[in-house]
Length: 504
Image 1 (spheres, one colour):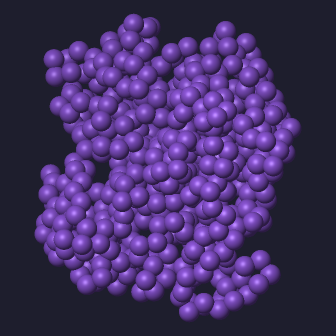
Image 2 (cartoon, helix red, strand yellow; image 1 turned 180 degrees about the vertical axis):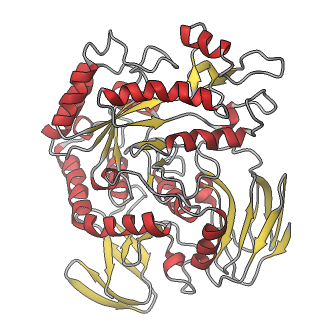
Image 3 (cartoon, rainbow, N blue to C red; image 1 turned 60 degrees about the vertical axis):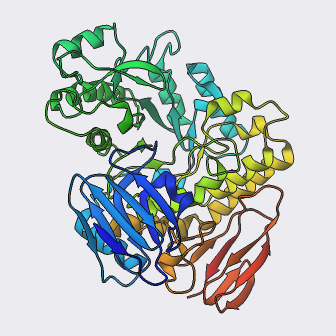
């Protein structure tokens, strides 16, 4: 496929992680090879432009933007569609034709209350008394109950999906207590099986595992070591997995965090129940997760329109695009590629080694607070590192203030969420999506929630004010009403993240 840029045209799409490098303009030069998802986040074989055009393929493709020209090649046909006038027109046309939204069964609880993940506080040492202590700490420090995710380490090993008895003497009682405290409970799982176990021998003998071309179980390497992998193309393998999950739900578990499943952990050409690419295996893991009302995914291929809560990949405790700087661009790209129900990772960052390495001198309280302020107006906000442990009283009060801002605007956020359930439109929207032809194409550090709420957080260190672009029209900031003709304004951020409301 070959085309040239139109005048003043900008493009977005592909990999969510690459949002910080977008939009792509006529003078830019960038090449991406998306024939297999190289990132740890969502990816769609899809790009769309501010001039109402889009590029689509059923498989990942290689694409080059170079000084006004676009070239793409891949295994499947790559189509260029045009004539849809604007960014929103291109999105809606592509969604309708290529990724119409499924029935959204995702629990609204994700948006109404925070998610709390035990990973940063407990890492691989998930224990009953520590989890209850973490949950009680949430309530004791003025945070509301929400969804509690128990992360990796709760089971004896991968493939044996039951609570380990030495860490959880009475898991059913613990879940009952958490429910009484107001929490829903989710568990971390992955599509892998630890070798040299009963479960490994069972799945091996039944040919439920991915096998090498020679017919031996594939032992793949991933971040936690070496494991066999469930053959996600085999319904019998999925049934084997689901049976264990059903038993967990019988004792009160509400849902699951479906981790791993990254395309690049699989090996092309391996023996499967049916032929599938490494990207397709990643997509099948997401499809397996979709029926659960409480689910979380981090990495997916071609899952635009699925009923999934999709998290940004693990962020570092930094200000750059690997950390806070990647939150807004990544979430905007999620919306533009059909993944509106997003979480900007764990507040402060989800890379646990960052926190282990963070002595008191290295921990950045300002960064943590700014992260919280940004997350408080995203579709889903997720805590892990306990803010009451890390922050002094003044900074912790800023966290509580951000929570109050979210509470204030939650009815409006929920209106937009429910609209996304029905229409598939983004919750967090690019400025150009809502206000075409007003020079908003390059703005990636502010966003709209639906049509009328403009959010402009601070994501740079050492600042308390920022410049933002206000589209044409009448706007309200707290009790002040002003008219904008589309110019830049400078605002001081005093009490929580800055939200400006359009007056219709």
